[in-house]
Amino acid sequence: MIHEQDLDKIDLKILRELANDGRLSWRELAERIGLSLTPTLRRVHKLEEQGFILGYIAHLDERKLIGGLNVFVSVTLENQADAAIKRFEKEIVVAPEVMSCFTMTGDADFILRVVVPDLDAYQNFLAKTLTRIPGVEHIRSSFALKTVLNRTSPML
Image (cartoon, rainbow, N blue to C red; front, side, top):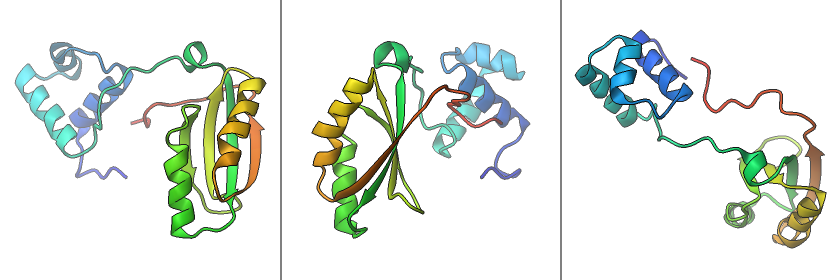
């Protein structure tokens, strides 16, 4: 959580601008936030060192590259022993269809966001990947009908 003493208004402006366009030149960023180039660079480097900026990436169009079917998959393991959890995590991170994986509390042990071109590809993922991971006891799939919001960074 951001505390007032951690970031000032200029730092927040920098983060907002870079979140909206990570390809900004340093000079253009400096102009947008109202500082000269050197203090802007100093602040950006400080934000990187403090871990507020984790990196710079291109936001790719999943629909064009992979397909438009988003599936949220709840996975329950037979047991929650460390070895079982680590085995599942080790196997799921190499599955290219899995875009996100979260350890959960509640009914499911994991929630996955899987992106595939169509139902046949999802069935293939289930049959050849997910159901073959040792220790998987229960799988429940929910298909996204429409993306309402998909932020790539928090609103500052």
